[in-house]
Image 1: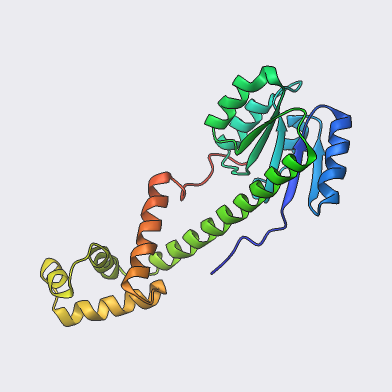
Image 2: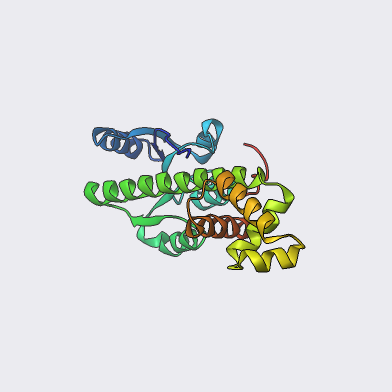
Length: 219
């Protein structure tokens, strides 16, 4: 099973140069790699949407705002967890960012301990999400290896139908259904019916959420 074993990095985007310097020292002293940017535009020039880790983002910046950057990244298919840093007056904006999918928002000033705690949670969430995506991608590759008939049998198997019933619906003998079932279980790497059902449900949920769609455009 492939995993998203990427080296995570904390990206800090804030137009306060001094704050960027302090944040970089804090984050790196706690074992994370860190890159800082003083504008959203500067960040986008070098950002790889497949990067792992999290983004610490100021709301109010000259040029593209933090909310605009978040919306841009979402449109491009980048799914990096975003921690929003905001002053008290920006709380309504931060709430908008949360509704749009931001991981968390923190009011300035925020203690080092709280900031690092949320960074760790965001990085862990990102790693789990990437592993989930890799797992679903592997399931999809396995499903694509099935023949048309095996795919039909799989759909009826996970619907809970017995081999005899499946044979009747598809015009096949029970023995032939058993052969197709054995082949599809092997190709899917499923060791039990319960495991096959979990795979099918995961694929169906991902298809519904649009997870299989490519990003609309490249950076």
